[in-house]
Image (cartoon, rainbow, N blue to C red; front, side, top):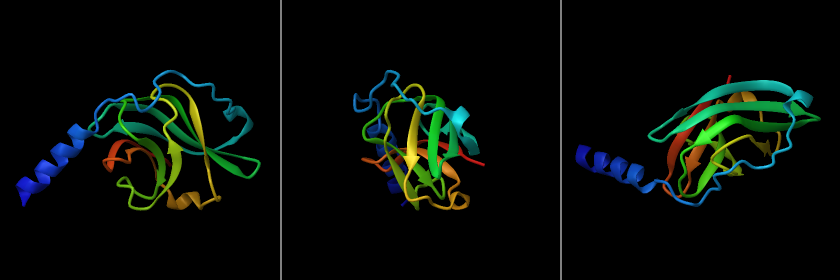
Length: 138
């Protein structure tokens, strides 16, 4: 059983390698954090992949937004940004596809959830159900 689990983890890590699925250059993101209130933030830690930077949640005019800045991630297939209750994405809100592997980018949080329940922003490889990086937001 240990061999099966080890083999599964190894295959998952190898499967999520660099691909051209996510743009790599900076994007034109116009979110201005100086016009919003910072709610919580955290620093990314890579999980078997290289991810770095900051994830911050801002609120403005009743809308909540996740801002990644500065941000850098190893590329991979089908990368998404999740707002998650834990670091394993067992209960999460998908904020959409990762817009770029580099630079400032923002993601609107739909449906105004209770942010006390959501403790992580994850860079998630949806195709292979693997976390690339996590930021515990406090």
